Image (cartoon, rainbow, N blue to C red; front, side, top):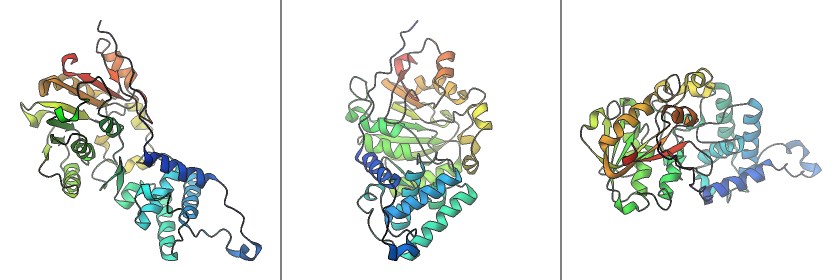
Length: 335
């Protein structure tokens, strides 16, 4: 039996962006200071960026909305709504915390929060915006709201000791199930010498990806390809294949929150045990990798099902700041 690889990848360092979010969260969770008696009539009326983050977080928390679309909790989503309304990048929220907000912008924030609660539509769709690794991306209901741990792993270049630790050695990358194109764009940033193919079955998703690729000035480096997994790629080979395929199992599909109903079902459904598409990727990936290449694939909570189905395969599980055992690496020789 092939020796099982250990999950030895150290957790990634906290980014400045993450540290900033946590600083805002810490402030937002603190109770607001009492105001002088003469201001008692308006003491609960928010006026600053931080006030509105607190207001939004409190409303979202009380309404029990689900946070799974680029934000992880009520404070993060409140900061996202406030920041986008005011034109702030997420990294700028902390420094702007005490800035006063005009009533018109305050009204817009309130309206967005109430729309988020009433409809359960993800904030990313309401704002047509999501951030990954600090980069902005356009999203709408034609594609799933991107959330993936692969971006962080790409930034780290997989750590020391793996074949792809030197980004200059990567000349060709495939992003399979690209959706909105976010991972392909992050791969282009991580591997500056590489050209990238980004494939998806959905023509609608590729329209969104095309918009993002153009917005980031990468039309000459990223080629969008429509088709079923490897089918449209013929005999192409790559140094790296990345994929965040559908991997929700039947039980998970039955229990998806209302927010997920706005997203394409095909972007979630991984079959009975969640790994139908992963099986096909594992079956065919070797024929599309260079000799020293490898596969980086996200499978969410399907690690037990995957290891049970492939007990002799030496998956190396790569952890990130916010995940453990959800992304695996396989060298071409192990496929």
